Image (cartoon, rainbow, N blue to C red; front, side):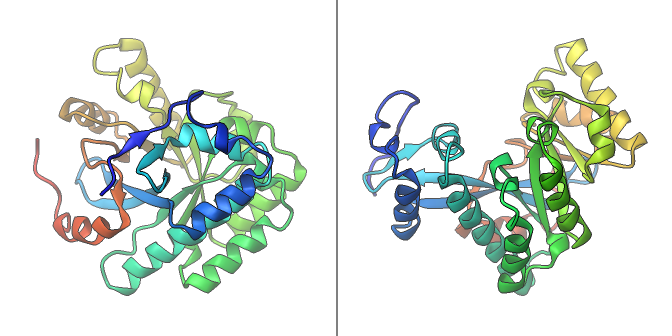
Length: 278
């Protein structure tokens, strides 16, 4: 296996900045350079597996890893985000349908959604077509959107989200607390849950302000009938704080790192019962 290298922002990315980046993404898909890793989520109180988030990974033929925070923003500047987004959506839905059909789990899979994808008036039809082709029930798909993306959304984007929600697709507001945090936004967009950004989760044990923010987000979400996922959970202490605050689900290294698709079935079987205290 080739040694793994990482391309940093500003270094070694010249080949990825040309106007044909969408074609480069297509080539990466055809050459199996792109893949998805799946990070598990679990119930805070019981440890029961509740779903996965699909995360894009790009490994070049020589083993070089291009970080998502490099290639995703580049894709979002043009057509490439539609190519990348549709590939990720189809791949994640096919994987989740495979787990379900194998009798492993019917836990939902979450896929990140770019605001540029909402600019496409045919996006809702694309999502529903992929669900039909892969056989994944709409309720087993979650689309994660950032506060900034939703704050800037137009009437067309809102209509797209309403169509998806009406079809049974579930919507999640990602990185809550880092953007505009508009309460009016929560009334306008039919999200079912909020994700607390890891900067608050990882600071809350030592920082009273971060702890107060986490507790307030959980209370607000529950008052609005929404569930809460805490990202970036890495220690038993963080999990205990979340349990005390009645957070619903957690995601992070305390539970598992993002898993290659081939390792997911074994993880599911090993976690059929709640994990032991650590």
